[in-house]
Length: 482
Ligand code: NAD
Image 1 (tube, rainbow, N blue to C red):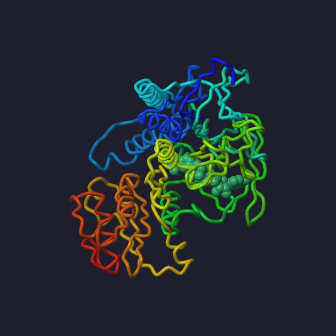
Image 2: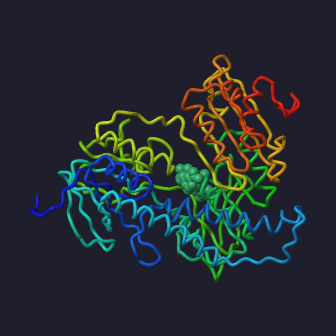
Image 3: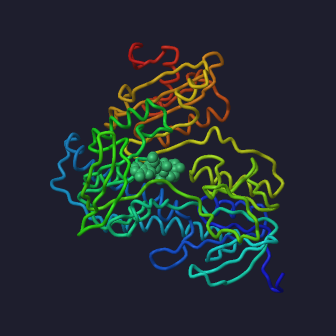
């Protein structure tokens, strides 16, 4: 070990939601902590928060919010008797607002780091042998070597490249760059109608693009409950999103100010001319160069790190969390919870993570959110279930705010009444799902929710009504409709 080498109790590699939360919790528990992160912002400065804050969820939701306001002013406000005259859109100003939000959130993490005495080290971290971490610049120049009793790998994921559609950063772009466009593309193509493609498509459609989603699979949102994916397909195609299923892109080439995309479906091959093409065909874990070969960290064939139920890798004292592992979905809140879990585990606090109650959210308008199992998955294993569906249009609050699209679906065990899944499509679904998550976390039954007083009128009554509807007791719906 070189003399002067800085030593810590905990070193976290990665400053995204999984990593920065681990560092905060470890420092709160009295551990000497460092967090190594290499994200560089538009001003060339380090910016904590990872993809989630800098180029993912936060910028996407910021733009979604702006796009919703624009859409409301253009298409919905007249119904309120409000005349706003002609309205226009300034994408650059919209982007500046988004950038301010990113800067604020990142600075907030830096302030919390300072408060807890966490060393924030800018550079790329690489795991060496003997619990050492090498820090080097993006150009590969070594800056420092530090070591710790505990090392947490939380380097996140990045957009997967698609060999048939090489990103050029101008006409063919990845999902990160799709949040930095300075004008609305007239005709926008997106490869992949997964969560990212779908969210981006929704934003740019509302901002005025013609959006064509090309999805290789025959099914739309196959991980969601089929009732929700059917409703989503119906609502979003009605909004004008052109979702082409069973459409596999085989080539994309940049021409003169246009992109030419070739894809195949059941009917044969087709050609599209687009102004921009976004590649949203999945994400891969950032494990390339994350550890030196001598460290002997075990990865699977797709680059994910092997971990056990305690987020421990095959190396003693080395943990991996968030998008780097396959223990749960690639979601910020999954990584964040794993961060708290690992820090507490190191401090000797024994607990576990309930991967069965992680909420899934798709930030579109309306939103989609669910927790637990889908009806198709439960039927496939022969589970004895009861199912109810409550349409949001029956709620007085939904009518008052003019957000009547969507439904709440509840699935329970037919004998025990225990809630097995709740699926929502509708306004504020991301907030509403929290009640279902809590109920499931406490192994609650539909009867527990049915007997819980919900404020009236609220959208949360959708969950109450779905619980009542399981026994044909819905109060605001004719029995045949539920
Ligand atoms: P994804 O795997 O969900 O979707 C990618 C889609 O691209 C797939 O459906 C695939 O069939 C399709 N595809 C691949 N190659 C194609 C081709 N040649 N032609 C046509 N279609 C093709 O990946 P994603 O949407 O990039 O998301 C990555 C991960 O990030 C997911 O785990 C997602 O849950 C997570 N994420 C979640 C949120 C959220 O929770 N709101 C937001 C962002 C990302």
